[in-house]
Length: 142
Image 1 (cartoon, rainbow, N blue to C red):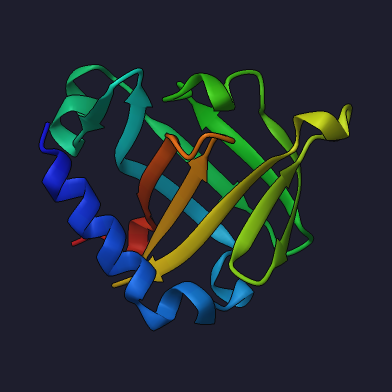
Image 2: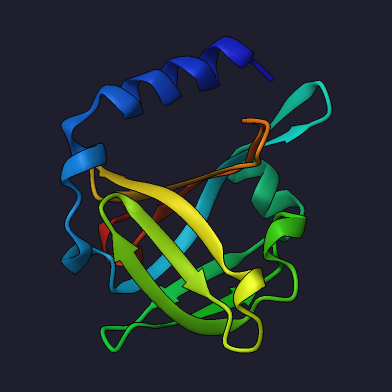
């Protein structure tokens, strides 16, 4: 787990014009998680594609053009547990997963696209990374 690696990727992402220029028309589709980071206490944990496969952690996030979403598979982080479907909305470079039963359970991510991959970032109030995930659309994975 290399902290330098995640921070350099994160800084690169923030500097990217794609962060502020992402188009919501790119969002609809099926997105498969292939890598993610979470902050556990004082440690930033990294889960790569091999680790996800080994632990059978398949996770798919589907966004539909009618602004509904569905989550399928094993939730990689507590933040997403219990969430299976609802609506989504976009404002600037933030995407919100809207819980149909309780608005207090909405989840807002900063998002960007890079090389056809979707990146989602969620931080807590203290600035710790709750989830920084990388997703690919199956047709784009080589």
